[in-house]
Image (cartoon, rainbow, N blue to C red; front, top):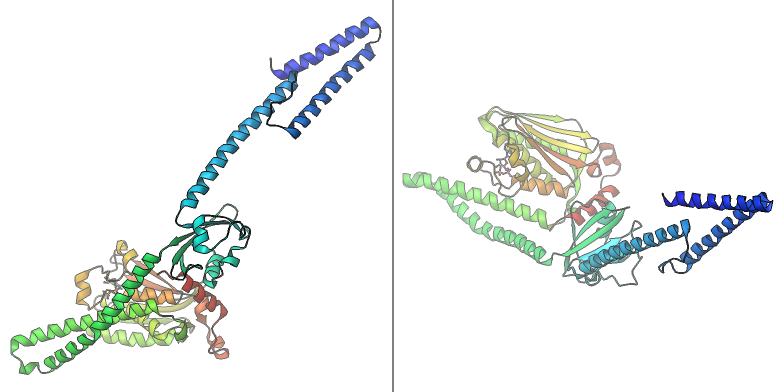
Length: 457
Ligand code: ADP
């Protein structure tokens, strides 16, 4: 029999006893009322005891009681004990996590949904300068005030980490990574990447210096070789072919050095000072003429489809270099008489420049690595065309500096399509241009800021 059935039986016994006593004493109604009153009083007493116990010391064993009340008191007591045990376990886990995070060399910071500091480890105190407990509840962006950090934090696009100097020490480079969890709370990790940053800096300096140092001797060698080739009729016949080949190779080296210098300029200089309104339609017309010259008697059909006269705010030289690379590649890597389409059009995301060819295409497995420096699909063919292997790396860097994206679609024997997608903030419409020639839009200023904060070392 369950405890509830037992309680009902007990209640019925009491009633039956009251009825018998009442019947014997000649007042059954009074006996029944008295029995109810006693039962109610007992219930009331146990409820008071329960309230008192819960109020004063619920961790102590419950007060003595019987029947259904004894059962309920025990049940509440055991439930409390179980809760306490799981709470203890949870606290232990939290404690362990906090202790292990405190021991981490990377700074870990937890920020609530209002952007206020909730918790941080010891490394956050040394690397970011947070003070415990004074800064608890302070707004994160009141403490980390670098505009680049604030722009990154507010943009909520945390796919790429952000590298910045530590607010405590300018020589310390920190890589911030932010993860959103729970109800818009954020976990911020700041890693010391000074060593990597310095190595990367050394790499950039090394490439720039070597390229720069090699340029002058190569120009001299090239100059002499040109003279030799000009006077090749006076040289022994065996030398004529050799000098021509030497000249070809030294020109190739010169092209590589020029591209390396351009890449290193793209990596190290700021685009801000070089921004103008660029007429892409006009630029592509000139590039088409150059491409026709490059094609020569190969007879490529180069079609220009200019659907808009929109202009781009950016660097003319850089954009010319990027677009020429794409169009010249289309000429270099397609066979005689192939068709090339250059399209310039607006869409909902901004404006797109598309260079599409009907050439041999590229196996999709090469596409993710195509913009790496010196990555070539077919080394032999690339050398034949005089390529440096740096063209698409230059295109990628130029587009990053213009907040644009490069999308490559290609399949073997299906041709290739290279699309440069420029964001709305970079566009200038003709009527806008006449009203406001030298004005840089506020959206662009934001974008440029965001771009500089996202730039990886
Ligand atoms: P390169 O100076 O060797 O042309 P790029 O960086 O411009 O270097 O191009 C990288 C590689 O991508 C090239 O070696 C070539 O194999 C491939 N490629 C580029 N454009 C095209 C194209 N339009 N069609 C086929 N392959 C291409």
